Figure (cartoon, rainbow, N blue to C red):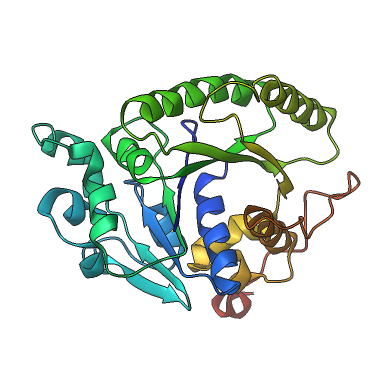
Length: 288
């Protein structure tokens, strides 16, 4: 089982979008996948069509009441299940303040779960909290979605320090599996410069005994895409909402790379960041 924490301490970089759509791509390939939404905003939960508070218990009950993963998870598509989130998770840190071993509750619950998944993807909140620590203690690898901006590179070093600290003190199996560039503008010089900076950063650190010494900079780029922005409001992955879009192409390619295959998409610097007009619902058409 590969347990992957999708992590970036900066918000708005495509973290939840990547969690949901990589999970959906892997499920479509026949792998059994579990998504765990650790963000109190519950965006991954909404993205997969569940309503927080109306779809049964959530991760909050696992962390604070001892419910099992089996009692909480919901299947949302063939091979794809989710442990949903709820706004109550925001208070979990205070509630667990006096709990011994609070940072390994999720790890222990995953170990006790009778259902065996090929992949577990954990959508982490954009902060270093007890929720993020639970993900890092349960994970075997970290996937870092990153925007091709200078400030994102600055934040990356802080993020790697956090992973290194957790690896040394709590979870020696934790590694950085890879970095994927999201919201990518193919035609900008800045994007190319950031790619080169990342390559230089990691090539200079290959020989060190660090959790990121074997990290990949994935060749797949997740381009800016209207379809990817739309599909959460329909409660669907990109493969349900717009299976022929560039967003679906990019995430299928990223999943292929994560499985050890060559990327299946080709990125052209002439590609536009804007696609066709947004899909309209039946209600929209009637109103028009």
